[in-house]
Length: 76
Image: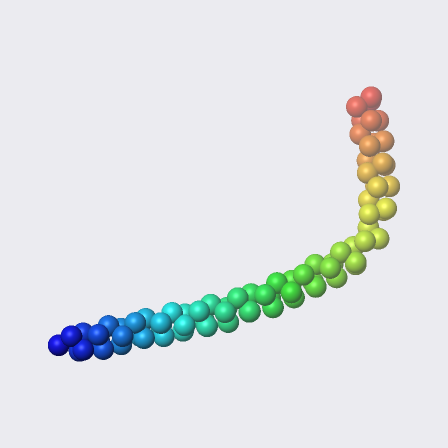
């Protein structure tokens, strides 16, 4: 009787450890996919940053012109 309970307990522990290992493997796969997706997003954001870099100086000129227009409108 006692050996049977010990064997049953060990079996249950083995099933539990197996289930936990399975879930950990699934979580690892998901995290790897997330990591790959984030790497792609990072590359895309860097490409957008490089492509929009020349806009900065042009926007400063536009903002200066808009400030002048706003001042003129406030006076008149």
